[in-house]
Length: 396
Image (cartoon, rainbow, N blue to C red; front, side, top):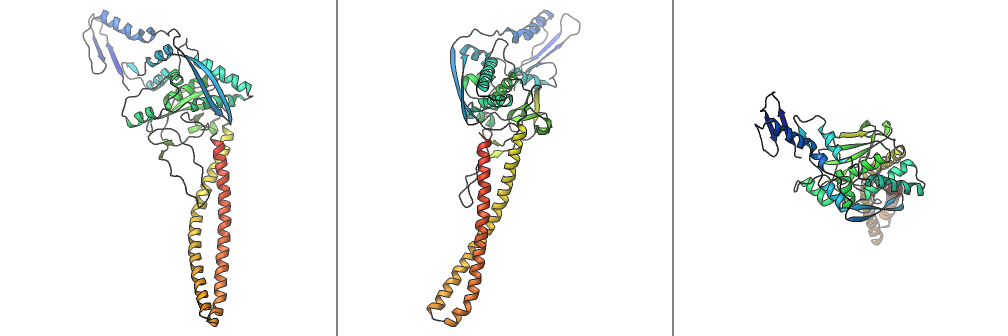
């Protein structure tokens, strides 16, 4: 991230020292009129960019799914507005000493559309209309908005460039994400933040520097909030992630991953994804608003999923041991059966008859172990079926 440092030293004389550092360039010994002119240009530069005329209409159609039902809406976007945001500042500039809250200011750049741009308010209005038409509650209306952002395709190429530092990539403003119909965690989170605030909810930004990941927080009851922050984590990179649940992210792309379904015992399992857990977090741009209350239901389901996942893992380990034991017992029974058949073939009746009780006892023990094993496999598979059912519902 490029930082521009400008220091003005006034000593009450006509000639002062004026230092400018920008990409290693230093200027000094300017007269006071030059300094005033430069300071005025620096101060006014952001305001000189006027919002453009609406030119180059692009009809953008969006389709997505929420709670098993299909939704769609259209927006009028413009080439001229897209270029306006594409050329807007994406680097943080500061004067004098680096402000302590510079990251607050930096993220604030991306969370406030130009006053003349009504795109986010129009989008929010369309989502409200869809929610009203489908008789959704306020919290469901907000979930509908989040699912809209989640469904916007994840820009894996840009994400890999960021992760691998192979190409300089700058964050996108919400309008750019809508126009390009794709984005990474930063741009999609900025869009979700601005859209959900437009719906009246309190929001924040969660930044994970070590994992190069950004998500949003949505105001919720503190007892359910993430990191006891008063905000519930909300993932934007991929569809289906519930508010309040912090997912693992995929190594290399930084996209959130879903929990996988589990096969019944004895069937082959899919290879596990290479994932990373999110670590230390910094929270910025906290804003108050309506509080999301449905998170309590989410945690009830999550607790059951976690319990089943733990139980399935524990039971599977026991079944593997029991299966190996039964396989060994089965081989022993096969050997005994061969011995009994040989005694019978050799007409060693006395030896055969004396071996029958021990053989029958071994077979009965084996049958009992097989029956117990089958019951445990059946119970295991029932847990798997419930787990998979909850997982499928959880990510829809």
